Image (cartoon, rainbow, N blue to C red; front, side, top):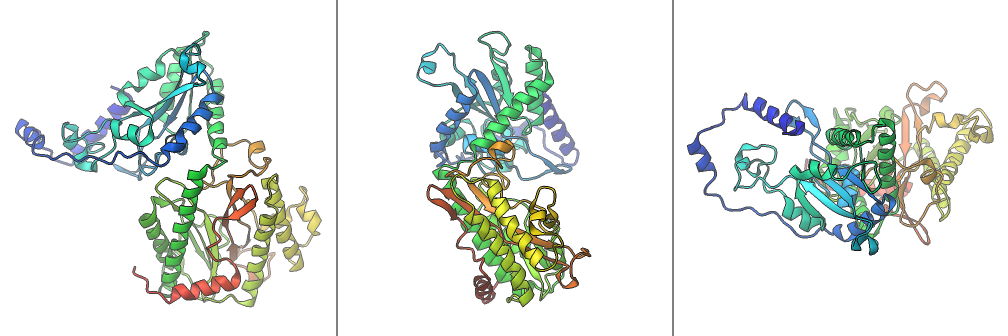
Length: 517
């Protein structure tokens, strides 16, 4: 029995301490009879059409090596309650499995014999998926196992179903350790292992034990090998295929609906205790209805909370006269997420001061968009956005040094009011491709198929004594999702208003609708 199975059994025993389960043979026989079969859907996923080319590219980068990509395990929230499972991003990308498919599963790319007919045909690896079999009503686990038993969790995809869904040959997870250990060694013709190491710590330790036992005894070298696999998997996601672009458009469309519902709830929510959370609930309800979940913790920040970059407590009051910053995105069932920020005048109309500040941020975003040309880099977007912000801060008398001095590497004083970056890749992760090398990210040319954000802002903290008093406690961010095409950048989120007059009109339209809490 593996340590993972032992831990699972120990947990089951502890759970039984608070529950009196029948153990009689009579009960067993009764529970094993009289059930109709429940068969889950086994249709191929749309993503399965794109998986072959992704796996081929991955295998060609690491010929002769066994590549291991775990889905990961449940994460404990508290006691015996787990967070909802979300598979590791690399696993999802290379299997096409989203939602909660499939805790504990492992994708393995096995290298083919270089002398084989497959190798002569250009095949480097055979992908195999290892998963837990179904615990349906033909097994005792059906009613005994609260983790996998279908009495507890409903029909779930097993070997047959997941193979049909993904197009990947699928095996019982019990065979995994033997499959990983086969032919591992340092001699010529033997196999070395690489794993996406942060997805499943127990499996990573198993892989390391196998490596140590077969001559790969330098832990640092092994870690470096694993990092290279993770790095490649991240950089592979930078160029989105047609399927991914469609999914991203779905995510943005659902996010627009979330903002619609939030604005519909705003008139009744404002000035109430914890009204930030009322609005958070309005947006998040759409995420659950239209997709899998929110792509990240929703930020609903009113007034003095808006300059707090990672405000996710959302316990504040949305007050009339304040600006309201909302950073939110729907993650669709395929796990692709949007990332949109809008800043609203709670009263429905921007004051002259609010209009001036908002327009500066909008002008900064547009400058970043204009810098987004095929062959440009992320750094070009960054510098274009920052120049506008530095010029406005200087114009308003806030930036006390020359604009060029502030923009120089030795200066950067304007970053006091715009500390975060203004662009990042977007996809299966809200900050997608984060394990990529600098030269493949910030220093790389923008290419068709890349999807990213442009998100400048101004963050005037309540306690910032370098600001005029009337500016303290104001935060503004405008964030949109952009697709690079052969003909230049394209706003994916163009249907979500961001111009001042459009935002005010949008708020008025939604305020006239009735919100059902």
